[in-house]
Image 1 (tube, rainbow, N blue to C red):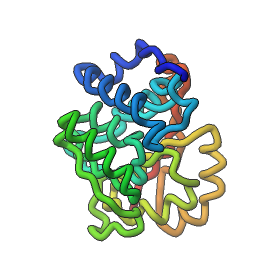
Image 2 (tube, one colour):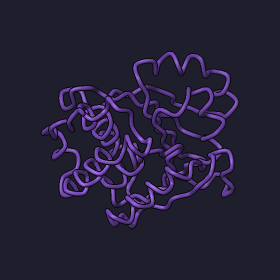
Image 3 (cartoon, rainbow, N blue to C red):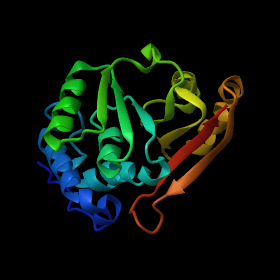
Image 4 (cartoon, one colour):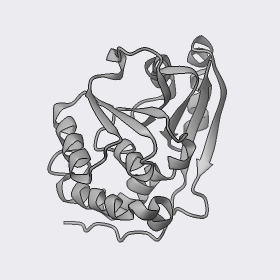
Length: 209
């Protein structure tokens, strides 16, 4: 069995006073994640680098006091990680699968994350209308598929902040029709973590009109 990756030095920079909470979450995910179908069997040697810090690096992009939805929260990447890093933001974790909801709820309670609400639903079932200040997602689906799901959840002037891989620029090109239809503006890719993380994170950001 592979072993959990040694905590990178960047973790202290990204989590600050919340580092202990981030460690507790990462340890729990390492111990239970494969058994509960949350992570694959090869992820432990890169759990911090590829997953936890990859999520946490986006934390400064969110506005204090805002309400943010995380679509397809899964194992809590990025939603729980961002909630740990940004206790001043209210997070709504949206996930349809019961076993993942159970995990998210257990972790929220164990880590005492009072800024987290968990909603068992598909994003398409969101019933509150365009009320969120931002929506994030990580490794859910292509941008052209995500836009029709996420943009209607965001208030006018709010933002999509979507964690993506190397193909992010190509995803924007392929999503031109959806970008026009949902009147997104200032659509761009930002590269986060260069010089700090072993693997930088690409984020697609877009304003909702």
